[in-house]
Image (cartoon, rainbow, N blue to C red; front, side, top):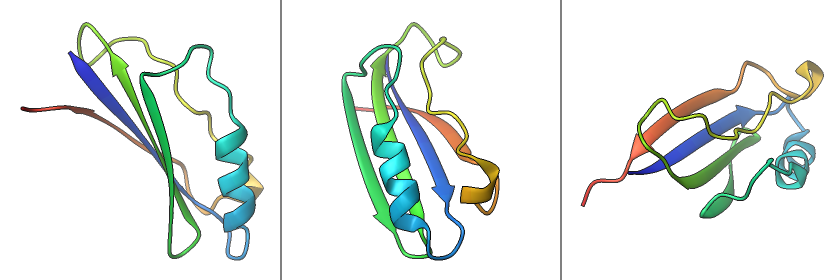
Amino acid sequence: MRLTLMWEARAVQGRGAELLEWARARVLPREPLRREVFRAPQDRVLVLTWWEAADFGAELPELPEPAPELITRPVHRWRFEAVD
């Protein structure tokens, strides 16, 4: 199965560029099939990674939590399975 991992964080006001650079600089222990980084209003950063996996609970590398002083709340993480 092909899984997409979503990682989304909201930076402290005015620190969105710093959070974006932090996320872009993170090196995972292995390379995903694909990786895309997005930004949005309110200093939000979204990272999507695509993986081949046996099931939804597969052990896959994920971005860590940034330093608490950089974000306004814990990171949101979701896993999605591609359909069709």
